[in-house]
Length: 267
Length: 196
Image (cartoon, rainbow over all chains, first blue to last red):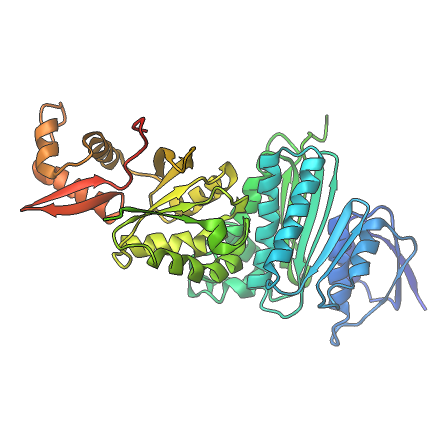
């Protein structure tokens, strides 16, 4: 039996290795502290390799870390049950349906409280909470799947990270349902259009990404919008903000991850 | 005739956090029922003071259709959005500007009054000037505006004023009333005692 140790510090590299390699029977992931986004992406990758048409390696874990264990504890995306797990500063919520509006409002209030407790000014905390809510709403409304969405976040002093993921049809297939965008051929094009205001599979929509990106505008940090075979990386850690598209191995659904801070990385 | 009806959005929706397209679709019938229960032709003051957070997608499914219906002449109401906090106002602005609409917004003041009534959205300067002129005179027709402003360097003919007034009326920013053979226009909201 071949055994391969992969470090999950760079999720892009990890997934490329996995897709290019002759899939081993077992992969032992050498866990160093893994970012929240990487932990969520790993859950999506694992779900992807559970599909019957995929050769599936056995995922083993050498060490564990809080971000990974909290995602694992929710059993997402296998579990469709509304679940909320909190472990120290990290929270993971499995969101099967948008029906529980009062419960969902309460979760958003808790998030906003976490942000203000951790020195985010109230107005910014509200804007970030709105950005998160919009991303979850996107997952519910556009993923076209009965499988639940996942929200994971981590709030530390003056720092905030969140991931919203679904394993639905992804941005490309969603936008193509609108006759205005049925000419789109790649996930990269689809992401490019999806982040513009007013672009959506249906009329009167397409404001979610604008809400999220506007909320982030005054913060240091980065965002990653990953769908299908592409990801958009927005780097706001430098004085001048930059965006890059990268090609990636295909994954189902959409995964948005944001990491931001009130302080410059150099301060 | 009652010209103003105030609707508390917190009471309409039962929530203080209003987010997402799905939330908007869920709540639109509640908005519609509340608005249609007000007298025809009145100014509906939608009070958002008790709302902590409302996002663009939510507005896109609730307020936007109401505004579009009123500008299309399908819903005879005028709208004023009251008490939006800065976050919600920024989100509303996104929706209004993207859809090339203009709406009145105001701040809540003591004793249920409204202050600082202003426009949200982009209004070309000729229309803005006309709106200001109507606000100043409280009630005006194309003829009266032509008479009052004919000495200004940029002379506008009576037809020019009539066209501007018709546009503002279509945008539901002024109220139109026929008095004899003349169309008279009034501000949608009277403003507070300080004339703001």
